[in-house]
Length: 434
Image (cartoon, rainbow, N blue to C red; front, side, top):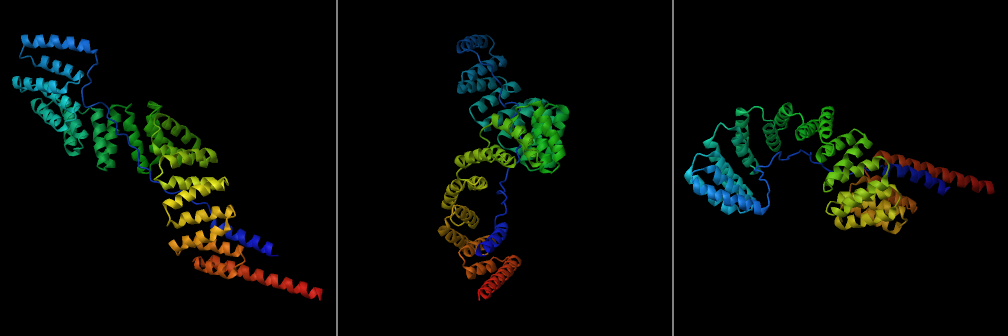
């Protein structure tokens, strides 16, 4: 009779205390693409050093013959840059600026050379002189805008990009950068307009398509988000950021196989993005491929030890497949890192119960209650532990402390009814033998 009583009671209590916990709500920053579509410095063709030096010798001879030809100085300076002799290049360019103070190409080369040595302030000064000399050249404003952008001076950068658009309203890349500035300023509506303008002028600008898709994702317009992200990865099938964002969206829609495919492409292109491993781990858990899910979370747990969420998920996954010894190892690490986390202690207690380590269970639940006195689940599990030990008084006491009065009342009524039934049966058996 006692055995029947405990089967009924413990199964009822088990239902109330072992509901599947949701995973920790790990925040994922929205992945916008801030790629620089072309570098802020000129691309110098790389020639063998011997060829460069022959070219330099010829240019020096030409400068002797034509000392006022600024283009020769610029060409020689670019050769110095090819040899990474930047100080020599700047010395030469400064000499040239004494000859012709109104040559925008000269100031552009001075700015680019300063950028090559990481002197952004001097580069910006040179680009400002370039713009002053040739104000109506949209490329000059774009160059200065890029210099400000790379120096995180968004206000001045925006001014120069606006001037670029004013002179040349067909620059898709300039709209792209204005979109990035709006993103950095948390102005999503403006960013959306700029990115849409950029793809209207250049439909294959997949970086803009990605960013449009992410903005729609943030705005919870998932149909539009999927449309633009699909366009981005169709244009560039191995586009890491685009595949990541599309995979995340497909996961949200419950399209697990499609999401897995996109995220695996993303991972193949960038093995350092932590969030990709995380999402793939979740997908395999949803596909009921727990062993595969464990692989991803074990990697995350080892690679990012400071993030206890991964170790906690790993412990829960081990619990699902009933590998309680591995789960116990995870909880031992978690408890060392978070001695006062009542939730972790309770989960640890459940694993200890599965391993029949009942001597430790009561201590763990009491410790959880000490850390969080009104933690209903801890009280209910401790009550369950007391009832297993036939300690009804302490069990009922914990039920009442749980704060779940409806559940506690029902359980107490069940206990009373069962007790009366047991007594009646015992009396019946006793009188029958009389």
